[in-house]
Image 1 (cartoon, rainbow, N blue to C red):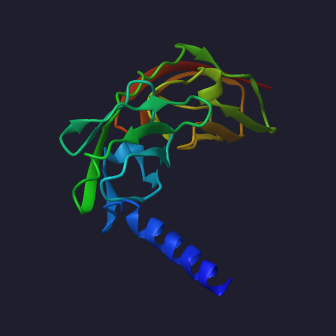
Image 2: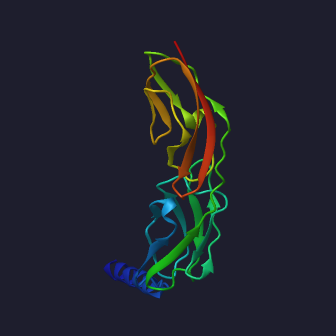
Image 3: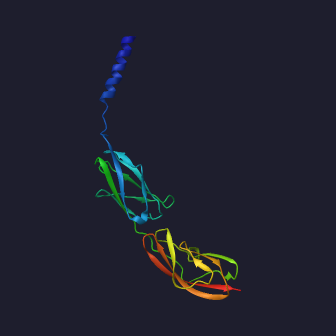
Length: 204
């Protein structure tokens, strides 16, 4: 009985030693190169076994990814798929792409959709002596570009007592009845700009 057990153990050991070994002598770390407007891009996972094909997901700290995004792994095109629900890019690295021990550079390029806003817009009427707040981005149906956006006064003036914040909110307490026309500039995080005309009115 003992002899049979010993023979069985030897057979299992021989079978194990006969199995082919995988060439996983190290890992390949992912390095991302992309425009600053895409923020911090996090690859998941961050590294792979050398010479091993594997899926990868790329998430951006901004919402700059879109269906126009392309990528290269080293000098080889890396087909990516954009998910509008998750905002991430997914791809599959081939074994050849992870063959270099150390670091694999993935370069990502995205063309942002153009800034789009309604112009001119009419702000809700303000009542003298009452707190006021209006969101220019919502009123102008702002879309496209690369968030976050920054707003600034381009020409004209707001009613006395009201100010335009960089977030696009006009707020304050209006004083005196009058009508005002002004324009404001919207700048996205890629540097794209658009000027929109606006009208406001204060009522006594």
